[in-house]
Amino acid sequence: MHKTIAIVVFPGVQALDVSGPMDVFAEANRFLPPEDHYRLEVIGLEREAMACSNGLNLCAHRHFSEAQDAYDLLLVAGGPQLPFMDFGKSFDTWLREACARARRFGSICNGAFMLARAGLLEGRTVTTHWNDAEALAQLCPSTQVEADRLYVEDGALYTSAGVTAGIDLSLYLLARDHGAEVALSVAKRLVVFTQRSGGQSQFSPFLTPHAEPTSAVAMVQLYVLANLTGDLTIADLADAANMSARNFSRVFAREARVTPAEFVESARVDAARVLLESTTAPLKTVAYQCGFRDAQHMRSVFNRRLGVTPQQFRLNFAGLL
Image (cartoon, rainbow, N blue to C red; front, side, top):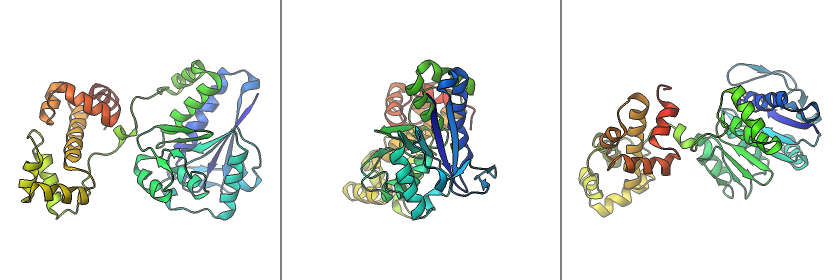
């Protein structure tokens, strides 16, 4: 039985948010009997060609006002400016009704903001691009935003993390529809993993201090980054800030929005990420240079914070940056 997959696009959409999922389901048709083929449809916010964020022009099959089908899967794509865009009440109404008709619905990347503005994320558990997670949580206080997931399933709602995570979500849905063997065949065709290790925190940029650059806290953060192999106890950091330990802990947490211990651990993880990406140093050497007790301690922290081991991280990223 045919299933129709529809993706909503708009001016400034991220092209890969659209083409990634569409290619998964289009490639799946190679391995499915004709009666099980997916039908793909692009629904546009505008009738004329729409420029993607990379300059590519997309022409939708139908304007949203003409799309009244009950889709098997309705996805909304994301784009760099989407968190700041508002498409109006008529579109929000259509989207709510279209999602109610669909068997499954969801978003790619920060397309979750489109769902949020239509009131479709209240009380739900979702994910989005790591860089937009905090803003989405502020927009929807009742929504649980899991910033380190590649995709999240909440009933009929499916949301994915940044950009290429739309491919991960689509492969997951394909496996649900037609089994792991079909999904694996498509993944091989697209030269991607059927299931990536870890969450999206391993792709986020390195540590960025939140404190004001001229504050005592910022000076301590710089001290930490320059002395990763030291003990870096609260007493050490308080001395560097010329404060009492108790006052330092309170001021640091308020200004940096993390505890001193959390900051130190993050700094060590980020330093290790740089060495794992850019050198072939043994893991025990990386662990020592970044202030971990030993390679096993570094492995434990990586697993907890990034969802991958240091060796897996190196295999994923060495030579890519």
